[in-house]
Length: 204
Image (tube, rainbow, N blue to C red; front, side, top):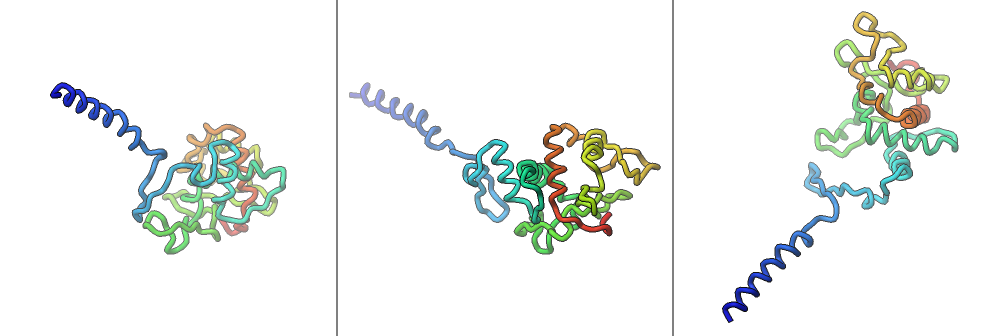
């Protein structure tokens, strides 16, 4: 009887050790937000998959401004929005201020991007000021053609030469990171910037 009891106890312990980890393994990653609520890091919970089409859908869902584009450019614009608003953090430097009063997530407030100044530049970094990325009167983002935009993003050269006494290259702007993007991604970013509202001539 003692032997059976010992064997039974050992089996019970083994069962707990083998089954418990499986039962307790979470089905998705969970992050804790600043307000104590749980946020699922699972695109399936948001109704999105994990492919190019889902990035396009996410891009449109998080675009903070109304977009104008041709039907044939829809996929590029959506992907560009995903890269600019979800991956790139362009708003943090190129919108001044980045968020509406009382809606700054860095202060634990519900997020609301400053639509009026969206990507219109004007943020100072010492002697440098972030550029206006919105379309000009000819529909060119930052007054750059696609070829110029690709050159800037690949080489960092400042085609406007705003600070020749310091460097012919853009400073602060993290082009050494963005130059590693595929050309198709850079084209998507350009298409998105063409689709956003213009800030007008008064922007930097």
